[in-house]
Length: 255
Image 1: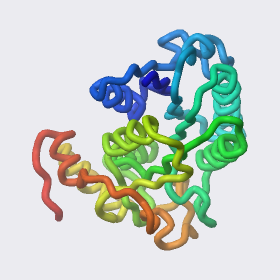
Image 2: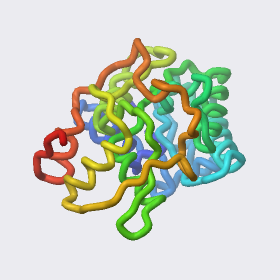
Image 3: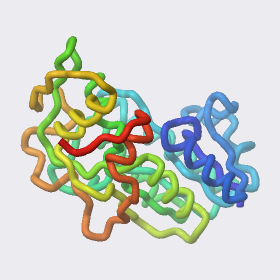
């Protein structure tokens, strides 16, 4: 199959491309580095020529609801219009687990919610893969809040997943019939603070972790269990210990 991966140079998209090519498919990267501008639509028609499916794994560093909504709305609209013109039979979107659950929301999720609405109402048959936070999420948030040897992390319960497991699911879904909404999470829940503690321990770095919701991507009134796997979720096979060992080349045990 010929499958176009929008955002195919990112954390998940690049791994999707690798898995598709390993399986013998033609994976086409739709990114600015490949002459495709998803915000203007330049280069999309050529990239989608003869495509059987499109995977949208795009992301944005935008920080406000207005910016994220504008980005995801524009990309989704441009992709779906070009797909309809090219006769693409399957649109696969990477989204966020429990996005539709009350009390789960921030600037980024506002944009993803709008993106899902556009895909579900669009002209191309679709699948939406809602993924839990990646194991890398602890490093990402720590980078936002770090001041010297101190980081602020919200005390919430997550069920993080390996980006590689998400990439494999996206590849598998894209080569089959549209499935509607599919969720994926990791094999074990973990407190966000513990995730960050274990990540820094694996890096061999000592930090002081302060539990705080101030300036965080989750609100203090986030419902208990809102960030865990829904009952029908696909459960990834990679554990946090395995991911830490692979990322930092040394096995890390639970505290």
